Amino acid sequence: MGDSMKRYLQFVKPYTWQIILTILIGIVKFAIPLFIPLLMKIVIDDIIGSDVLTKEEMTRQLFYWLGGTVLLFFIIRPPVEYYRQYYAQYVSNKVLYDIREELYAHLQKLSLRYYSNTRAGEIISRVINDVEQTKNFVMIGLMNVWLDLATIIIAVCIMLTMDIPLTLVTLLAFPFYAYSVKHFFGKLRELTRKRSQALADVQSYLHERVAGVSVIKSFALEEKEQRLFEKTNGNFLDKAIDHTRWNAKAFAVVNTITDVAPLLVLAYAGYQVIHGHLSVGTMVAFIAYIDRLYNPLRRLVNASTSLTQSFASMDRVFDLMEEQYEITDKQQAVALPAIRGEVEFKNVSFAYEEEGEMVLDGINLTVQPGETVAFVGMSGGGKSTIVSLIPRFHDVTEGSVRIDGYDLRDVQVKTLRSQIGMVLQDNILFSDSVKSNILMGKPDATDEEVIAAAKAANAHDFIESLPQGYETKVGERGVKLSGGQKQRVAIARVFLKNPPLLVLDEATSALDLESEALIQESLDRLASNRTTFIVAHRLSTITHADKIVVIDAGKLKEMGTHEQLMEQQGIYYSLFQVQRLGT
Picture 1 (cartoon, helix red, strand yellow):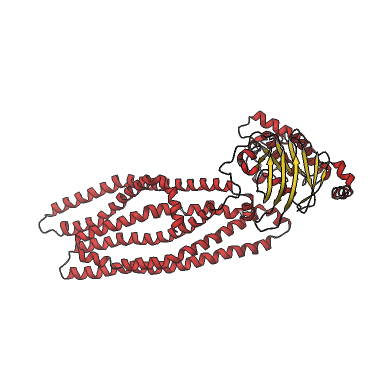
Picture 2 (cartoon, helix red, strand yellow; picture 1 turned 180 degrees about the vertical axis):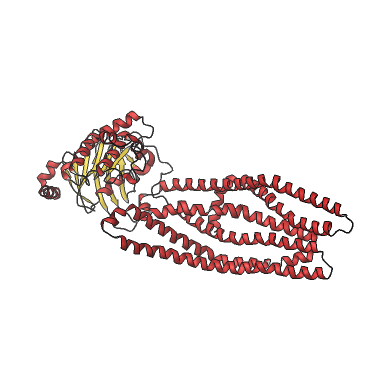
């Protein structure tokens, strides 16, 4: 708890004065009702029980006191209540905003390896649910706890002025209360953490299944999926019940202690009144103060539960914040100037895991500015891994990748990626308008530039035919568009970016022949006068390449033009013959 709370307090620190102001206003708010028991004593002992006042004077005194109290509650308390609530919510929401801002910035710096090993639902659960749960720490731990403690202290001080022995009797239950809270709520944090993880598992499962609902329906897996969900949901239920069981034990013990205390006070005060050592008004006031004394205690018990949830959520939030960046700029990293496009792979070897098998082994390749290089080979050979090293999605395990002589590890990542355009087999479109998705290539582009990019990508005509044209929402991951349409939008944003270096990773492999022809035409136009890397599935689409590189089991086996490789009658020749026979 200590480290997480210290880190959390760094987000709270900018709002210290607002929190102090909220607490001061809150003390006034909670102190006002503490006047009521004192008023009861005054009315019973000093007005009704007076031996010297006439009935008229008693009535006048009663209305004076009650009139002043009404003014206190109806004029002073409402604005106090408003500003306490406003500042409490304002500060807590600002803190959550700051945490989510930093979390999102952190998530954008994490490597693709992290995202391939972590479920999206798990990440979303931490950013949304867990961050939201930490709000209780601000609202309760930094505000309400202090207000309740202040209420208890003020109430005890007033009670001491009325009767010291009776006040001590009132406080007899406090040590038992403190011990029970410490005993029960120590274990509750771990149970809360397990419950939060189980809830994140449910959210992750739902996120994946909702995204893949078409697969479930196409294979008629609804009943099987229902059983799997029951298992995941049942695990959450078990953890929630464990948490509830322990929480119920805690409340049973703590509330019993707080309920016994008024009985002790009633017994002692009643005895004192019977024997003439205490006034009826004082006894009534004390009984009223017990309610105001132990209500904050009960709130503190509730606060313990809420704070335990907050601390468990803090742990999960900061666990995510502590994820290490795989790709970072060196301290002396330089901005990569406008590149010509010479790319060199020098003795490049790569493994996805530190002790894992090498996916690439000793790759040596030099590409001249403006050349088109195609990587071919069997699936799993390492083709996509090679091109993922160019924008530095991963760092090489051995050797180096250089652009215009710059080792990619020595340049600022942003200046590298800003000069590379990528078109993938499964391009992601966001659930915004077609125009917004194209603008990702150049956010400040004009409408004319967007349309020109769409035309170059053979996308303008189909975009114009959509219900709202360029303003049409494409749905999550572009679900409202066909595969070919999504690819053309993705190509349009690369045209808009106009990068000097291009990576095409199986950009046409999953399309029908008509869409492929349109997209191939736009890709050829896009690759003109740029250094271009192509990972190809259909070999007929890369016969024009300046270099064709055959990758097999992570090694560079053959390299040359289409004609040269066909003459060699090696791996490339065999692959080409197989595909030609298959058409």
